[in-house]
Length: 140
Image 1 (tube, rainbow, N blue to C red):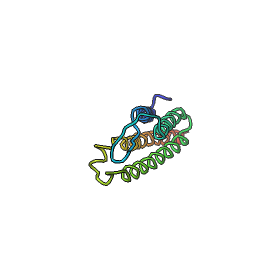
Image 2 (cartoon, one colour; image 1 turned 135 degrees about the vertical axis):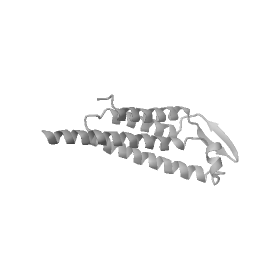
Image 3 (cartoon, rainbow, N blue to C red; image 1 turned 90 degrees about the vertical axis):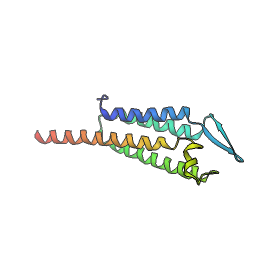
């Protein structure tokens, strides 16, 4: 049953992180000059790992309880990544001004927030399916 709504939410999360691993540059600050490099960085690998993790969750559709646990783990990893980004962006030069956070340092900090929303919606849909199966089992 891959054609469920939670699979779409998880696939959107995987697409977000897949594109982010390719398109998001690594920020390098040398002195006060901002240098963007599109080299492979640790953040790209983290994004790619989270995308693969979301795809793995899709194919565990036969075990909904495991899916729910893995979605919670993925949300936890996204919150940790978001905390790392906030700390990293605020500790860089010019990081105390929130207006510069998005204008100069990019929108990479928004990807974990968007994926947390989609992961939460997928978790709710899986929970709804689990409750439906439990209610049908009561009639047997």
